[in-house]
Image (cartoon, rainbow, N blue to C red; front, side, top):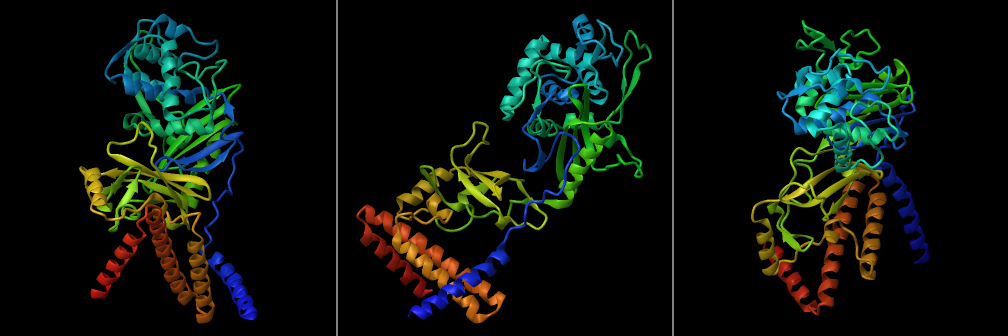
Length: 479
């Protein structure tokens, strides 16, 4: 017996090495970098961080601040509203910051014209005038800015003014700026404004014939394929510069249905555009988005009820949030991602949400999706439970064995050993895989059965479990 046991253990070890090679996840690609001090590229749909360098280190943002300013203005003002430039908005700027629109106090422009000037050629006076128009004063607008980033979940940044000029406590991290940009470029009007190559400004006191302004973002405006700044996927973005901040850049890109955002902080002239471009190219070349709709069916298909919190649901009464994706390496699969069911939902959860599925890949957050209850789902699920059908618990659904079940552990060991021995005896990788899957399914069934038995035994209903099990076996026999 000892000799046979030793042989079995050796077989198990060898076969485990084989299985590890077969099922190993692809590594998360990281073979890129930027010359700037900090940078990040994220997927705008999944929210996954694809690559980051010093992404939680704070730097002065310079004029990329104006992305946040534009987002708040569009959420609180009509584009056709008229903005009056006050003397303070025109002249209360730091020395040397310029007046690109050549506006003077009393000039009037629409909110939309001011936004084009704000984004395309970074007019500080437009930032001030828009802030006063929306909030009554720059101070009140700054409060709105910091409230907005808190709402978005930014915890590493703070703003002092709407233009991005120097401030004693004005700083941002690449990570937070990516979150801000993700929210901003979900606004179609802001994308429309930021992607324009030029815009005609109506006449003002110092420009009686009007003025044409041009986009300053080289990745967005360059159409010459021979240029080092040529990147046709670049759609929108914003540049920034201060002596303390260096060159800063945000770029929003679209390619093959994927939306990426790169952020560069403390960059150097010309190179900061190349840094932004390289991060985006890396994101497109090495990663993919995997749609969850139609593929994630663990909670929406099947016969057994699912218990979420204090309520039981039929799988047919649940649906996955539409149009959700996760980001994986090019060779990754949905099955490579780990998922966690979260029942304590954030305040901004969609209507009908009962749980949140969070996905990770090698401990990286790669996406999420809400489970939505259809109308009447909770009532239907409760009726199922009252009729005696045993609902799946969250532990059963995620296939986690009970810690106090020695018998389960024994079954688990036996099933795995049998599966591995089958692989070696058959000698073929394909046949071994089939055996492994069958034994895995058997093990999972045993775990669920033992967990139900444990709960019923604790309630004094062990006989009820045996009765239910016998009825199911008789039913299968008749089929």
